[in-house]
Length: 343
Length: 248
Image 1: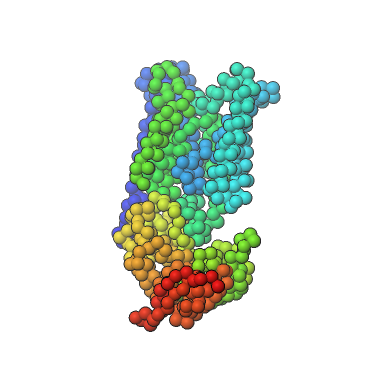
Image 2 (image 1 turned 45 degrees about the horizontal axis):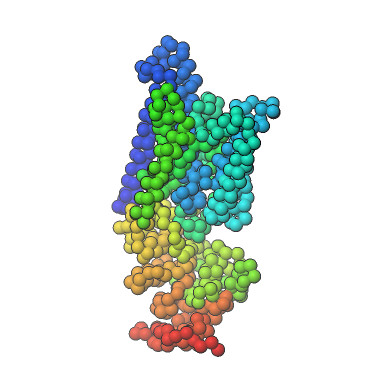
């Protein structure tokens, strides 16, 4: 084997090692997430319950019906946001893109607010009506962006422009609903927009995991094409790739993924922006590694944020959307500043 | 593969970029397309590569195979390594688990372009000349039968220019490629082309060997410049631009 091929194999092994380490850290964070909470249960009691030797039914209820769904939701949503952010940055050729850039989550927020405000009058189960409306409006936002964007050959510039317009539209509509809302409804809307894992239930976790399990293999099938896209549209086309079709296909998959994640937990910022950057720095841009790594780091970030949200004030769980932004913003500034220094 | 293009025409909206261009190219030869900015060179090349809607017929005949197309250098600076970049040239056969044939082809292309030592370097850290070599290796990795290159030497210093062009001619001869390159440098074209096609305002102005094509009158017509054309040390023409021609 030549040094070039050997070097390539070595890089592949190193990247697999990075992903394995991230998963190990994720397992540790997940365990910590189970062990901590406002109920202040002793770790030994939690451990006994997890091992099936617990005798206290209250501890069992807290661990299995409260903490486990939340901890799993953090992992599932974090992975979904990390993965969708990575794909967004690739197809938009923009390192500052995430699933929020194109108004997908603004659409979701509007859909949720719509049901919070008017859903009570309808014979609907709010537990599912709110996520479903959020998902539907995320899809609508995506369809608007794709519909406008494809008119100009689905160029990244056109998609970003259409997406930002969409973001403003749904934010304006959301403000309108907040303006019209009663104080009680307004409080509910604002709390939804904070983003919170507390709404996690086993069924909801399962939905996000299923969407993730369906989308990740589809994206990996396009991994080489997405890698080539980073050389620019012209070169990707010269390699035989139908660029507009690839971009719209990936955009649709990411929208479903983001929609499913945001629908159940509300808007959680910065995971989708930051996780792909960490992944890119550590494993490079070969999307066969970059996509799983982004999902792993997204899951790790949100799981760690979930632990942090319970540790700031013992006995209180901060909305996780606030925690991720507070961690994310300084990181984001550091990222922008260090990029400026490198170039 | 032998190329026979007849009456190629390209329109962008109401603007005719290319009007009724016919030309041929054959294996083992380098055809250089010259012309002023906006004369239709890139439109012609993209049409031949199947990347551009056009009127007219383009026929490639003879032993079949892929057509390698190397677009102009772009501003994209991804964090890909050179090896990964070259491997992408095998796009049509790449799978999640990369096959031995694809690795071998990428390796051979790296060796052929003399950049095996750069294999693990990130693309963004290369000089312009090294980057062009990486993309040339990417194009060669697909084992094409024809090679279409859009300004492969623009923005390169003279040493890298000569290196890239010599490499291209060498690969063309050895692999029996049908090579068509758009160049801006008339003297480089005169040295390396077997044939030259000159475009002006979307029409084919001249087509033939460098000696037959390059003349004062042609340069005035194609570029609007006054120029002296002399015989170089190897008998090929050398062009010295003297000034912009007075409007006639």
